Length: 359
Image (cartoon, rainbow, N blue to C red):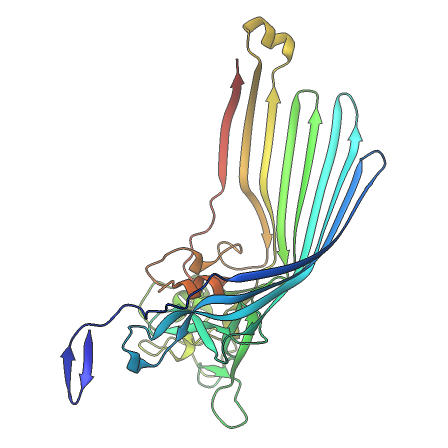
């Protein structure tokens, strides 16, 4: 590594991380209160659960002074504690039970609220993206939920100059703060299973409501500042004084309009047909002739349909859960910066054909 000693940089060695002989396992304690109900000869089942879960000794990469000499100026420590609490409900019903036809349903929904309780009195900024400058777009602070987005408050393009106007702080300068939350108000799933003679149909739908996505991909595709391909949205950009638009003007080599702000926060709610399977089992009268115990043909579609207002490719994304050339993707980023779309490859729509055969 290069050390600045006096006026001349000196080459030397630097540890990649700081030794910490006091590292321990994270410790989680959880309280649950549940209620189960079964009625109508088990045709209706209902389960509810309240949970309060606290994790202490949370492993985080905590900032350390640059004088320690560690690249990145972070070290792994049992640095803090978090809390998650909420309600879960599940309802199962056997709607129709007949010889040739049956229909059953399962619905579950859960409401979770989480927050950081302590991170040794410090504030961390994570979720690093690098369109041209390095931006950290998530904040970790006691009292805030993990997944809080951090940035400026956009007031749209200035009709006079074409530059993005940001809310001003009382003391002057652009106001900075929490601009969004990646955590949904609730998440849910709904499964329906149908059987008609030898045919079966299973449909699983899944969704979230009330969460937000930081669409960092738009920082690249709408910035008009770093010479990369742009989306068709920039055709609506500011071009002359008096233009009223939410898209600023082109500013090559000037990233002022690309700063993380509420401009890139979007509604992340969605409902997705996650899985659909249609199957047919050959009747036993046919199987007996060919001396086969079971033969079932099936076709499965995954991620078949998605209903969402999100403008990106996929609302079910998390850029920092997988490695990408554009991200540092540290362990802290993975844990504390969910709900970020930064050139994230969308989930594929898959069609699977197959058969189950037993002799």
